[in-house]
Image 1 (cartoon, rainbow, N blue to C red):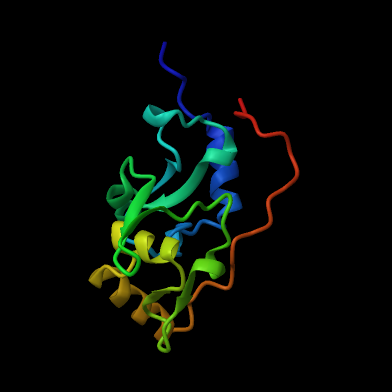
Image 2: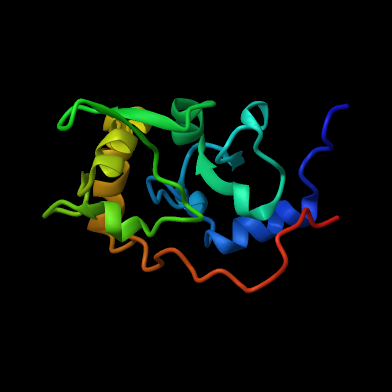
Length: 156
């Protein structure tokens, strides 16, 4: 039997928890030309659920590049490693901004694999960040907000 869609209430929780930013590349939805999605970190086909702990907010570019992947190849170590997990990992532990704040710099094997797999420095995204930086809107002032201590469940 097919699991029901993610409820509208859970979608709102995921959007707000992410401060309406992509949890991978930190593009801001309000000033992004593309659509954002609630994304399954572990795909349902691989046993992932609709629980809030398995959902994140992603821009179309990151969501499309990630697809059903949960791991990527790290060229520096020549190993397959898990991708950045927005619910378990802290973004600043795996990534930083370059000097002009327009490109994501990976700090770890997880960061490198995620950067490559999701193409976090897509040319259009880097240019978008540059324009926003020039008007003082990038990088976003939010970092991953603290999660509320609630039961992990699908919210009806």
